[in-house]
Length: 207
Image (cartoon, rainbow, N blue to C red; front, side):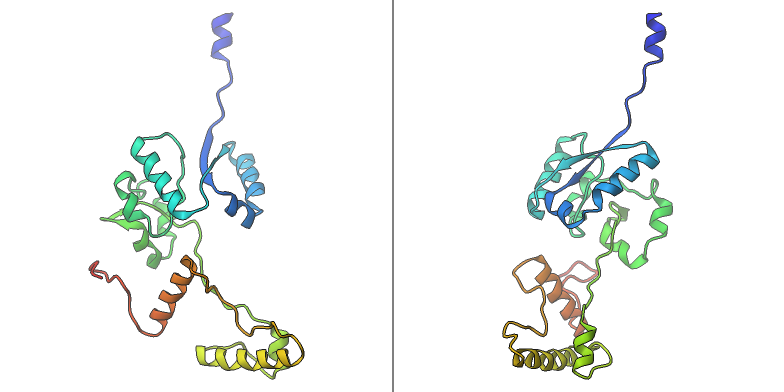
């Protein structure tokens, strides 16, 4: 009877450990409900591994865990510029995610490949967009949003002048990510490419 009871004991549920920092959770309030839905559909439980909000601190943590051969986390969240740093401790994902990789935009993949290995895959594509107020465009006689930087400057300047004349002294016609952060670096690189300035690191890996 004792042996029979042991043979019929329930198996431990499969648990997947993944990293999440508090900042991400605050910015994406749907993360919790989506995790619960994932568990309902797959039967796989999820366990959060708290990580630092600083990207450099997160990178240091990943390097430490990988080099120690830690069993957690099961899934890593890596910045698009990290694969080259971590590649020595990452496997080629193509044998395991061939179908998923084939469905991705080809121009995205070079950022996730090192020495011919696909060491990571994107879980989202972040694309810069221009948000604008249609009511202000109409009020100042515009039937379309700006299409060039020169047009943006003219339209934003006119709207800003008009709104401040109404007493809104703190009104700005254009706001952007100008703080000294990674976002500013990304903006600068986008402007460089948009103006025909080329890339900083070419395909031959020369600076």
